[in-house]
Length: 198
Image 1 (cartoon, rainbow, N blue to C red):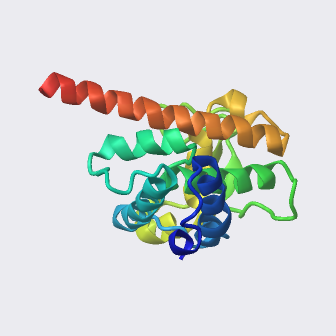
Image 2: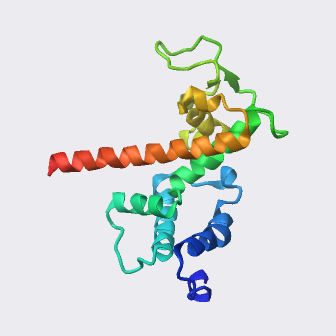
């Protein structure tokens, strides 16, 4: 519909704004509740955004079949791949909750790490959260669907200096830059492996 009604828009920046405002905002709404968690479902969303990126960059005749090409094009359009966008939304909400910026409390099974762990080796710190739930006693698919359970692991994986930021706006800016760096580093690693195999 957007392509048909806005066919006269040729500027990349305007097309990007149209996509973010009228399209992505729709299926991104409340993604913390419904977001896909299986690789196959996420791939379907990425394929949809792939077509949108082609439209934004006026490259609808080109193929983005190579996995790395899509991410490079996302970077060019300044649009996070949806897998990372969903993680961004999860972590922003989690940050607001742990910093008491919104009236939502953590579930009772999540506690701040106090220096003791069931694991022999741990890289947790004083801003890490541990769960009392055991994946062995529950369906792993149910835990993957749970916002708090999946997001506390993402939170613990963030650099400490990023988790120490209490301001929501500053956290979002730093977090998005961090996710982009992970994205690009993964691409560079994949390129290095492919070159070595070649």
